[in-house]
Amino acid sequence: MGSSEEDKGLVAKALAGDRAAFGVLVERYAAQARRVARGVLGDPDDADDAAQDGFLSALVKLAQYDTRRPFGPWLMRIVANAATDRRRRRNVRQAEPLDPALVGGGPRPDAAAIRSELGARLRTALGELPERRRMAVVLFDVEGYSHAEIAGILGIPEGTVRSEVFHARRRLRTLLADWKEQAR
Amino acid sequence: MKDSQAFDHRPDPELGAALRGALDPNDDQKAFVARVMAQYERALDRATVPTIDVLASWFRPGIAAAAAALIAGFLLGRTVLAPAPASIDAAMALVDGPGLAALVTASDPPDASVVFSSLVDER
Image 1 (cartoon, each protein chain N blue to C red):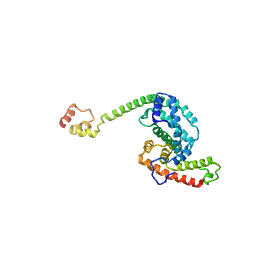
Image 2 (image 1 turned 180 degrees about the vertical axis):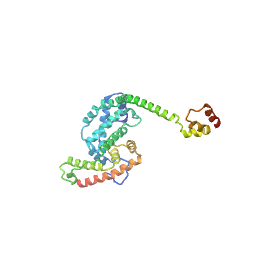
Image 3 (image 1 turned 30 degrees about the vertical axis):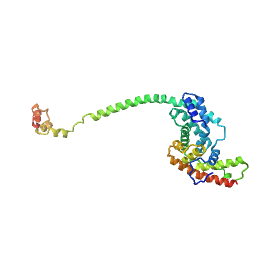
C-alpha cells in the first residue's frame, strides 16, 4: 500500500480524469478490498463482485473524498458497505461449508493442505461471528487499521470497535489454539 | 498468539497472518484490477448521464402533473368557495312574518305592496 500523500496525489489525478491514476489506486487496494469483502461475504466470487462495486462507487464519489484524511479508511468504508449491501440482498447468513474430511481431522498430505484446512476453519469461524465483529477483527488484525479508523469505517463508537475486536479474537484465538494442538 | 482474555490494543500478528491467509484471494490481483478498470467508463457514464436523463424523463410527466394539479385545485377551490344555497327554512327564519306567509302561499304573483310590507314588517 502506498503512502497517504501518494494516494492523495493519485486521487487528484483521478479526479482530473486520469484513468491510469485510478488504476494505480485499484492495484494498491485490491488485495485489501477483496479481503475485507470476503470477511463480510465469505464466498470469494461474491467478495470480488462487492470489492468491484466498492471501487466503482468510490470512483463516482471521488469528489466527496476529504483529502485531509487518509484514503484507505474512506475506501474501505465504501467497500464494506458494498459488501454489506450485497450480503443483505443475498439474505443468507454466510458460513462457508466445511469439507467433512476437515471437520473430522482427516489426513493432511502436505503443508499446503494444512494451511488450507486452517483457512477453511477460520473462514467458517468468521462466518459464525456477527458481521460487525468480523469486519472489526479483519480491519484491525489483518489490515492494521486503528480502532479510531475502524470506528470511522464502520460508523460505530471506538469503544464498540474495541469490544468487537476483543470478542472476535477470543473466538478465533481459541480456534487457532485448538488447531495448533491438533496439528502437533 | 496472545492470551485470549487479555484486552490488547495492538494487532495480533499471528492471528492476523492466519486470517490473511484465510481471506487472501491467492492470485496476483491483475485479473481483478483489469475487471474493475473494464467498468471504468461505464461507471462514470452511469454517474453523469442519468442526471440529464432523469431530469428529461421527469420533464413531461412533471408538466402534466402540475397542470392536472392546477385544474384539480381550481375545481376544488371553486366548489369550496362558492356560497352554499340557503335552505328554505333558513330563508324563512330570516324574514319570518305575515307578509312572508302571504307571499309563499299565494297562488298568484304577489302584489308589490305585499313584498314591501313583508320587508317593512321585518324592520
